[in-house]
Image 1 (cartoon, helix red, strand yellow):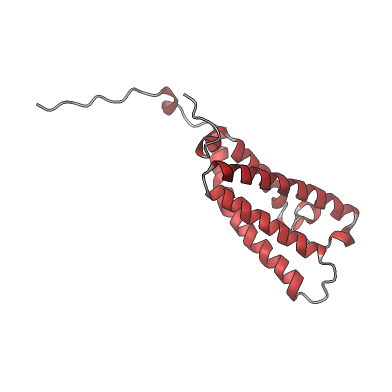
Image 2: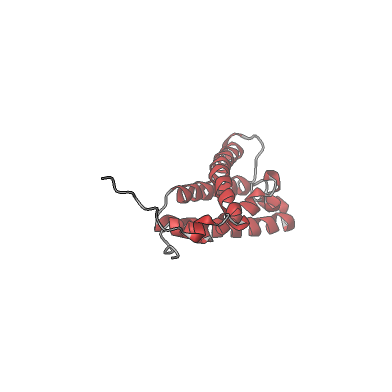
Length: 159
């Protein structure tokens, strides 16, 4: 005689539609997964070109800042890809530094444009449609979302 398997108890939270905030955060994760590696590669090549190949480039501050941005973008990409506690802390730290650099360099590029030169963070990322200013904020929102924190082992699953 075959035993019938009973259905698992219904979980009311699984029956509810996904709220808009959760959809936004999941969408933000997809955007970050694509945008950070692309921006890391593009800023690396931009900074390298400006520093070593562009004729007449006198002020190395802009290219060095762009290469610094590239390093931060690579570290953030690495932190997003590895689902470990230390990677979450790395990502939050890197995105905090990135946000601070974008704001400081953005302000300095308005006050002292000749000192800053051409960099990814110039005028808060105007050359990249302000994405260098918006991207780390989206990244921080994604990292601080409860489901993301659970995935990294920072927060226990809610029961």
